[in-house]
Image 1 (tube, rainbow, N blue to C red):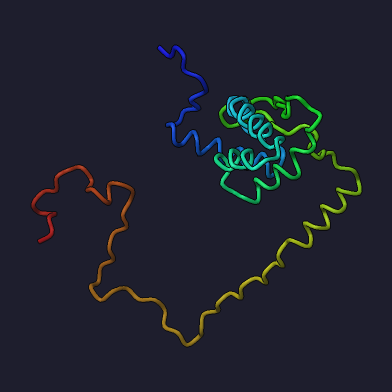
Image 2 (image 1 turned 90 degrees about the horizontal axis):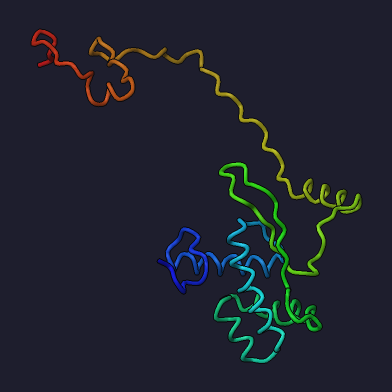
Length: 190
């Protein structure tokens, strides 16, 4: 029985679970919005809110507590200097979870976890046009098709090996492990 055991297992060992949550935390603070499964989002929400509470303190101790979870010092700086000041007047509830529905492959419930006040993703016609022009610029130039090698007229046609017989083609596992029947002595190769 799991009496008194807190947290979700997420189908992983302890170290793998900690690494997963750390990488999701880093992605959340870097992008300010991530898409993941609902249980992962619910587990991540408490950790993210705790780190933002530390960041709101703004002192060295808070930075060090954040740095224990997030080993990217530039990201720690972003959390304390850019993200935390947005929540100075807020007493909690720094994140929001949107349920997105089941994932196509395995029907796992998906969710979007985002920081409150994250830049919106609604695309206007101006931003659509800018994104399309960036894609055109970022797309590498297509390579010209390779010229097909033409056979030289003076080249010899392919000939069979001098042994006279061709080797039989292997067909599936039978070719690798034998046909499964014993050959009579007259067919055996010596």
